Length: 216
Ligand code: GTB
Image (cartoon, rainbow, N blue to C red):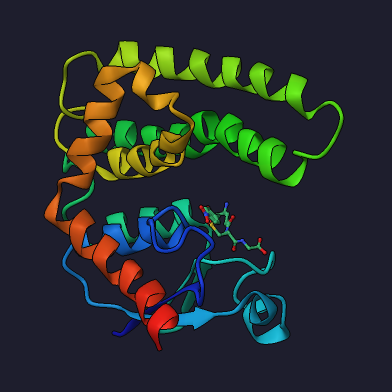
């Protein structure tokens, strides 16, 4: 059955893999499933056809037969459940990998998004300069905890899983801030994720969209 996902027609990050379709592409590459991509403009995302797939008018979405999904975490979870390669076989290991997926989006990503909003959407407000350091402290608290848990292991809980995939992608968004570099084991963890052949294929595919749009 053909899998179709949606992605930005023109990603604001200029193809640096920070938009959330990257997670879905990466998961599909890890499990070896081919997929089609439907590119959507910011305008089309808010029109009825796309809103029928995504109630909040965002990317990514996922279509497979009569299934339509939104939310990158739910999509990656679906892929991980449906195809082997991203979740351990044993029930407890599986449950822990899923917990890491939730931790990535619920616990670690939350303050990182807050930072982006404060910096880019609220950067012109008088209180912004005071707010950002407070958010950075909350991010550092989370990263210190995550760093302590990861220690010198390769992945969060045994073999690479959908939990690592989600966590690495969440952390990538922080790289530009320099905060990630304060935690060498987390930087190395992210680099290990980026070094995976599946990550590289997904990254190249989304970069090609930006390159084609810029040259075409
Ligand atoms: N919780 C949802 C999920 O995980 O799927 C969040 C989806 C979401 O935020 N989608 C964004 C979107 O569609 C794209 S990924 N935004 C358009 C809109 O809301 O109108 C967020 C994103 C965008 C751009 C960059 N960047 O350029 O660096 C990084 C991340």
